[in-house]
Length: 67
Image 1: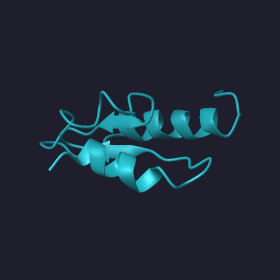
Image 2: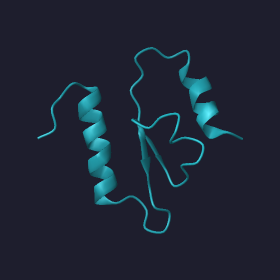
Image 3: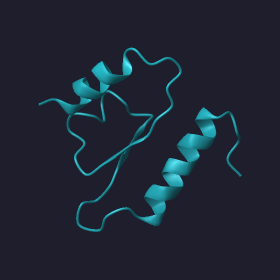
Image 4: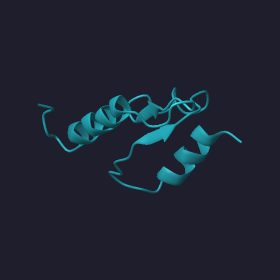
């Protein structure tokens, strides 16, 4: 199915829900959640760069400036 839509449906009843999506497919998620999505290369898996992007998103959502 459309995973982006499924995520939207799941989150619609949640208030102030903070999240990050890590996935190796982006076609059905990236456009819906561009500020919450990190594409993970399926060949190499989660990289240090991906981890740093995730941390940056978390800090931003928590109102903490990235150092």
